[in-house]
Length: 147
Image (tube, rainbow, N blue to C red):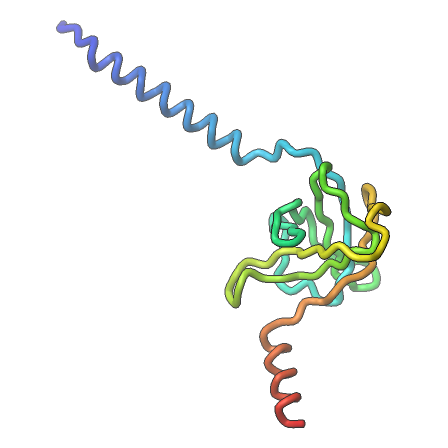
């Protein structure tokens, strides 16, 4: 039997490279950031689902963890925010989208004069703007045009 060291070394290098790519893939796709939980209640949740981004001023600061109906039939959106980001108590949260056909995300706009009063774990943001679908926006435009 002929010994071919070149093929053995090449196979070993292929295995090492494959394992390093697998390790990198797993490392990038795991959430290593510590978070705290917040929630907001909407009349219409409009296509937001768990796994969508939470952004402040266009920068990702967290992830939506759950969307469900409460006993009063409000759409409750639970989301996680990275620990190093402080969300002011008088912030406004709304459901926005990346363009017409883009993905939905939660947009938080810091509000109020006192930015030192921040939300802590399991608190609710009170100021919400409900989701407006394209149909809602078109009907507003037609109503304004006919006035």
